[in-house]
Amino acid sequence: MSFINYSSREIILKIVYYGPGLCGKTTNIKFIHTATNPDARGKLISLETKAERTLFFDFLPLSLPAIRGFKTRLHLYTVPGQLFYSASRKLIMKGADGVIFVADSQDARFEANLIAMDDLKENLSAYGYDIEKIPFVVQYNKRDLPNVTDVEKLREALNPWGVPDFEAIATEPDGPGVFDTLKAVVKMIIQQLRAGAR
Amino acid sequence: MNPRTVIFEEEQRRLQEVCTRLTRDSLARAIFLIDKNGQILVAVGETANIDTTSLASLVAGTTAATSSLAKLVGEEEFPVHFHEGKRDNLHISLVGEDHILTVIFDERSSLGLVRLRVKKATEKLVEIFVALAERQGLGEEADLFSEITDEDIENLFSDTF
Image 1 (cartoon, rainbow over the protein chains, first blue to last red):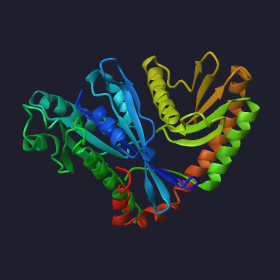
Image 2: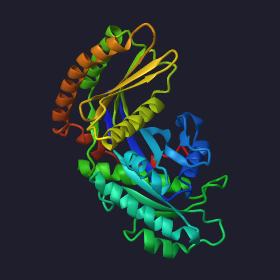
Image 3: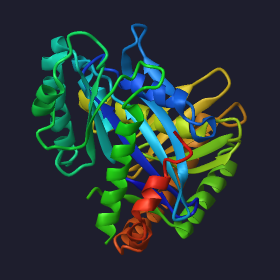
Image 4: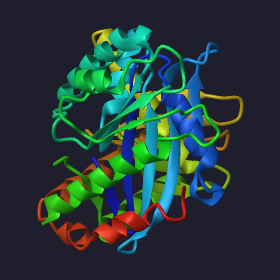
């Protein structure tokens, strides 16, 4: 649910990173935090356990240039990936304007991706969203690792809708694919807002 | 399309007035009005040293978690939750269905006073939100998005990443 404040002239968009445990959701937003112009980023909040697992959520606010005189702010959230954190995962989805599904490309995590995607669909419908309507993109992360599944096979399993999808390596210094993924979902959100206004 | 929250200048001013008055009446250090998705609407009082964006997202998170806890133990809702610190305390309460009022206070005030004043202010805030909801249905904000061009969207990313 986008938030438009005519008094402070701001538009705020909430974007949620979803995916199986340890697929790299937090790594994505940590990379964005590091690589974004310091004037444009807020403080990164990470609620992690000692084992680097997101307990509740990570949060990163970003400021984009003004659009039609309105400052555009992005609020990026990650959900905890582990199956047993289902309750907190659902809470973070509330009010999302767009969703990024981060898949772990390793063969051994193929099944975990499918389970996470089912869970996402279920949580979206719990809030009345339809995965075919909400701005949604898919990222195939960890493409640098050995034993990764072919993109074609991942696409067939995780992106039957043909939404924009990207290969990524969030751990690399230049984070290939990370910004492309984020840009794609922001564009979809704004295009959808525009289509709704016309 | 997803529903959206729109705040207009008039309602913003009225919300701000209620919160400013509440800060004075409850002897609070600072007051924040936040929506349940973690967006900040009003920040008044001694807010200069507080990261209000982070505060808003964490308050929304903890309120969502508290609400789920209530359901787990068979309560419909815990409309108020309170955090007591050595110096500062946090009084968090629901305003209607979608908003959260957060009061930070120290030894200059008391829980009883804050609770009393929050209750009164909440009624006024709910009235403003009802008026706002009616206004949102009128579609006054539609023009903003219809004017956006593809170029505007491209330019969003030019200096940031």
